[in-house]
Image (tube, rainbow, N blue to C red; front, side):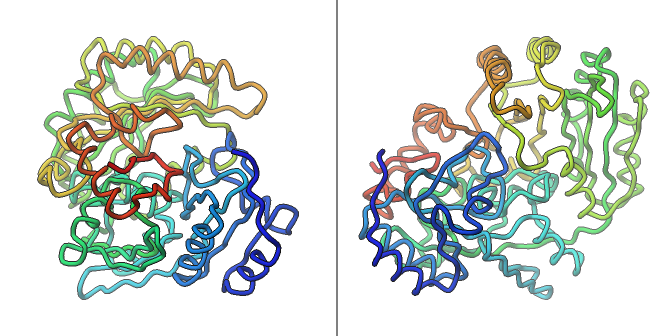
Length: 453
């Protein structure tokens, strides 16, 4: 698409009408405002509307419609795929909208669309409360929740979207709606897993749960024992209690050694957690055991330093049918050829409360999955992408015979077939019909796009 020319008087009118800032190329703050967590993404929007409230979002949507501008929507977090930015068009940026209000008596919280999970947890943990929210505190609540929402607490309380009570939404025609089980329930259903296809969610209301000190941390094993460790991990997690979530990873230590890491979080009484984790901690034994009682906010942020902003990131993912020996051998073999010490292969355990939510309640279709696989290729030199991308693609191709769909939040720019694979044909058709109702012109299309029926 070529550059869209925007009349100067239109820009001046919008700038005067917004409470937040409106940035153009050359303005102070423009380059920081277009920087994303994934350093591979380098796009130059024609305008960036740094919205200060819902009225700013509505104004930006209406301007984009009248001017025929492509629109990207940015929350407060990572957006590894890069859909939060567009070339030449308008970015509606909610990252300054970070209000949070906790109701400890009702055990609910209302948070705006630019909030990160670290900010969210800081406020809710003041009252000993939390909800499922990712595994890195710099992740935004908006994108994670709209795509489903994995996290350490999901086996206890379900996905982030399962804990959503209501959402304030600006639609493609600039209308402000409340989506909940009683107001626009079809839209509420689609928001919980359907991504950013149906509108801009300016605030989220979540159900909270009592969460205090957790038993968590990392176990480290030598990569030479990877087969034994991952097979034990598979067997151990098959019978783990709902209070326990364990993720596994093939990675490189800060010292440059290939390792297997097991990251655990037990959400419950510490003494019960000690008993539940004892077999995992005794197996091997590990080279390092860093599991200890810790505040939940520490558990949520323990991986932050390993996922800093600005690196080049190429990501591929699939849910797995099982963790068979063939799958594990494939992962280990390909990790042996990893091209960067910053890259990793991650396994995320599902089950528990995720599986008990009725399939028809939300637009998240993979509730019966046991594990999700994430192949994260990362490096520092923007000019040296080819071998790192090739490594991730080769591993992804090798595990495709063992896969069964994909988590929409882990999709890159992979085409319409992969978006359909995130939902399956039946669910995708229902989402396409919902898209036709709320966004018939596909105004919100710079996303993992569900096309109107």
